Length: 114
Length: 114
Image 1 (cartoon, rainbow over the protein chains, first blue to last red):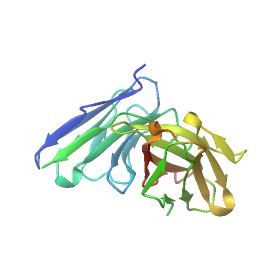
Image 2 (cartoon, each protein chain N blue to C red):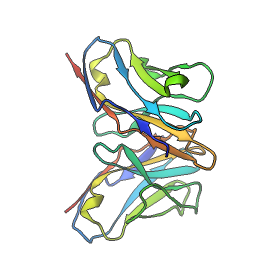
Image 3 (cartoon, rainbow over the protein chains, first blue to last red):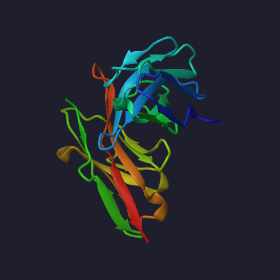
Image 4 (cartoon, rainbow over the protein chains, first blue to last red):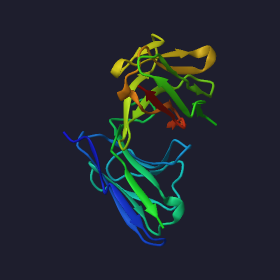
């Protein structure tokens, strides 16, 4: 039981390049989330999904897209990376709604955009 | 707008000393309250959570937190800190209904002196 895994662990991009971050969970959770963590700002929700085939915007969605084609996977895409997207990205999942349920986090992806 | 405040950015305690990390939340209704811990290079792990009932909540690793409605606070405590407790601690509040979001504080970084 691996929990929540993220790929890759670290990535360096040049401005304008694109990439996809992969999140996978093996707990059969309905809800999945993408957060970014920046110094002094805590975690901010980028996008989330309430089930397979669904996605919704969070607090800071601009510049990102997501897809959830399979229940266990949640992909975060950056179409044209910008230095402002340098951050640590965390994926999380929970059984149901995220206001009351425990969220399980992946180890994070550290992204540097030059 | 809802918010979660952790007034201490950085705290240093001696090993064996007691610890209290502060957390205050805003909004009229009592949200669901959580404490998460993030060890260096890792994702967040749930320490404890409060929904209702007994205002003193026990968590993992010897941590506890006390909910005080009159002060809109949910402070985390540990009677005797171990060197392995050095980490960043995040308080979070879950607001349901139409709001339906989980808001994180900015975190408190704990250093433990030998």
